[in-house]
Length: 280
Image (cartoon, rainbow, N blue to C red; front, side):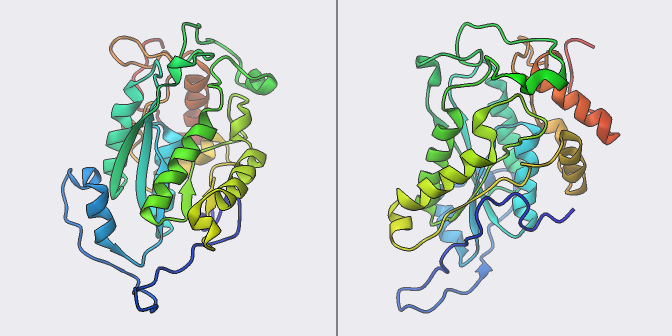
């Protein structure tokens, strides 16, 4: 599979970074050190480390899709900055997974932004609404389920865009998928294309000639294809968490839409799922 530009919503790159005298900055990376603290370095330090490389903000939820996207961005030569969201979700255990994924995936920095969407409610993930269980994977796309969080991806991409603008990054990677998914409208190519247009109209960087690109490399991939690609890139799926309704020990329920899609994906990919499920 060619991962070079797969799923890129637009076909625009960033302006080359330039020194104060107008000369183009050299494309090289200063040493950044080793060890588990690398992904937690300050944004200021991370900005000082890089000179002239293609920076990218990668949305990292802690799930298998975002872990794969992080690996793909890095494999394509981007310098990845991870961003996660503590949004009042019932499955907050995913934030611990996101930290592990960002560190293992080589993120130069990892920022977790708090935006409490449970104040608004309206979703089984942020409100006192039961998470659907036992649905057929074939029928998940028939309607928009109660696990849809109103405008969540719009909010997340807006915050990722703000982070990108601060960093001087013109690439944003997101693990949206329109094949094996639960019917969310904000995972569709049309939405991502519209948001890319917004990004280039509504920012200082865009007004000054910079061009943002939203990359969705998984958009047309099945879950099995995603898993195969991640394994090829060395992703440790044992670090990831997919379940919407884990038990008090953090174990996946095995019955929600996300668990069902994950389990089916591993079976179809011919790989063992490292997830510990509370139900067989």
